[in-house]
Every structure is written in structure tokens, then in C-alpha cells.
Length: 387
Ligand code: NIG
Ligand code: FE
Image (cartoon, rainbow, N blue to C red; front, side):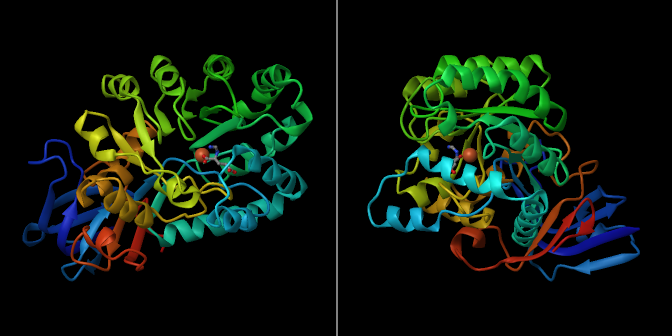
């Protein structure tokens, strides 16, 4: 069936070769057919279709590509958040309490939770989500987490190297042996990506290198959590290994910025983390001006960032990180696609997947201008309405 969305007041295409980097088209229409976009142009030149949707002058943007989440876990850490808002510092050690709750949950409990998060993400305009393991930290549970994630997305990341679990506290190298050996063997068949938390209190640069190289040898592509709690060598390691993305980047040195700008590695900023941990926001303006490719993602997890809202992240990136609304929307769509090395999403142009969001607003600017307001009116993924 051919579906035409017409009378679009402002269409953000992210199409290469458009007049300006974040150019939006006025008075546009988009045709979808068999899950793909087959035509984009002026509304008054639109072809016929079996189904016509009148956008009534409102804005359409690509579906959000949320390239960083941890959606398979048990329990929550609301009390930890409350204590943090009262002055306590965020520490990676809290991950261990989620590990206990996750190990105790059944597959069906984790699956139901996961489906609930996906529904809430669709309702907020997300059409692609990457999901990491990392709250199992033993072979059996990590395998469960990547298997459950693979039921709902092709973008599955094995993050056995999230932190050293309590039972290996005295033998971190032994834990890296486990992650790069039997755990990787069990998880790799379900995953596309290998990730590591390269940070003081988690894994050193040398341990991170071992994890990433083992994953690469097993056919996984690298991405890295780094420089969340302080500067470190994770960014340079990510660039050296050709990682698709380094995520967090709250504390970057000038050398990190230069290395990123000269690389194909995307920097994925996670504004929900700074918001929920009261850390300083990274200066996205400085990074973009230096030539770094910036993506935005939610990092949905029970510890550092329990939002699943890309519109919220856009609003914070504009308000507190120096991005323009147009840059933030690009980073949350095409930027996320780059961070996942995907050539079929993040853009509204013929041949791309029909992943689109109709906003209840005349312009994408409203996503930052009206924070907290539910502006996502309708969402299509592969041409099928999901919200
Ligand atoms: O991406 N940085 C490490 N991992 C998660 C936080 C996990 C947690 O606190 O549970 C993150 O922020
Ligand atoms: Fe994360």
C-alpha cells in the first residue's frame, strides 16, 4: 500500500547535498511504500496514494535513532537518585545492585519490562534503539540479556565489561579472562557490537583494549563508554580501534577532541546522564565547531539516566550544551544512525526506511522550545504506525 503524508509545513530530511547542513523543506510530502520511502518533494507535486495523511502544516522529522541504552535489567535505583539529588555523588559501584536484581528476574519479567520501555520509546518518537547487556556479569545472565535484546532490535551490544562484579573484586584480570573467553563465546552469536566501560573504577585502558580486541576477533564491532567520570585514555583507544562511537565524553581533553575530529568515530553525548548525576554538561558547541560528529542518545538505565525521551535529550542539549535545535535533531536522528554505522535510517529520502515522526508542532524548534510537552503525534517504523 502507498501512504502519502502531505501538507507537511516543515520537513527535516537530513538528506545529503541539501542546501545547508540542517536544511528543512517547507510545504512538503513524503510517500511510503512497502516499508520504504519512495518519493519526497513538494506537496503540490505529490503522486497519488491509497492512503493520504494530512499533516495540516505540522512538522515531520526522521524517527529518532537512540544509539545507547541498557533496557534489560531488574529493579530500579530510585533511592540512589533521591540521595544523589540530596548531594551524594554518582559512582559506578551502584551497577552491582542492579546486577543482583537482574540475576533474580526471570526471562519473562525482563521481557515484559523491555517491551514496556519500547512502547514508551515509540510513543516519544524513537524508531531504532541499540540495547546493551551489562547487568548480568556472569556467563548465563549475560547470554540471557543479549538474547532478550536480540528479540527486539538488531542493534545488540555485549557489555560484559560493564564493571567487575563483586565475586571477582579480588581478581579483575580473571574477570577480563571470563569476558573475553566463555562469556564472549556465549554472547557473540546474539550481538553486533562489543562495548566496555573504560573508566577509573571500571576497566583500565589495557583491560579495555583486551575486551575490544577479543570482540573484534569474534566478529563484533567496537563502541566504548569513556570519559564519563573524568578524563582518561578511552577516547584515544576508541579512535585507534576504529570504534563506531565513544559515548559519554563528559570530560574530554583537547587531544581527545582533536583525535575525534580527525576520525570516523562519532561522539555520542548523553544529556540525561549529566542531568541525573549533576555532572557538568559537555560543551557540544566546542565539539561541533572543532569538527567532531556528535550524536545524542538517552542511555536509558536505572543508575545514571532513567529517561527514555529523545525530545528531553534534545531540549537539554539545546538549553545546556550549546547545540542549535536543528543540530540537536540531526544528532538524535542522522547522528544516531552514524553512531550505529547504519546507511538505511536517520534520513528522509527515497530508499531509506520509512521511519518518521509527525510532530504536534509547526517546527522542530518546538522540541526544545516546549520541553516536557508530548509533541509526538504519530510515529511510523518501516512504514507501519507504531504510535
Ligand atoms: O552508561 N557508564 C556506565 N554505565 C551506565 C550506568 C550504569 C548504572 O549506573 O547502572 C551508563 O551511564
Ligand atoms: Fe551506558
